[in-house]
Image (cartoon, rainbow, N blue to C red; front, side, top):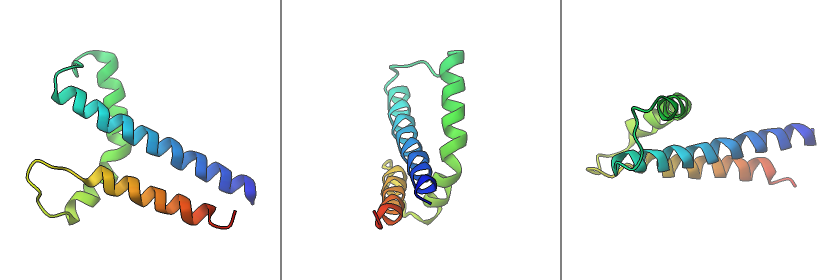
Length: 91
């Protein structure tokens, strides 16, 4: 059972890091530091978007309008960390 818990923990850690990369990439695009029309960048962004936007969309549905501030990635990060703590609570 320990191996399954370690595997789930590793998958959640990878998901968290990819979320951080997705948020930083969106900032870099907003500040025009990276070009989203370059093919490699576009493929990476599309992959990250397909991975995170379904979950972030559900969170945004329940969030109040804060103007231009989107805190849904922070809420997702906290939720995944909470799951990791529940998972590793017995160890």
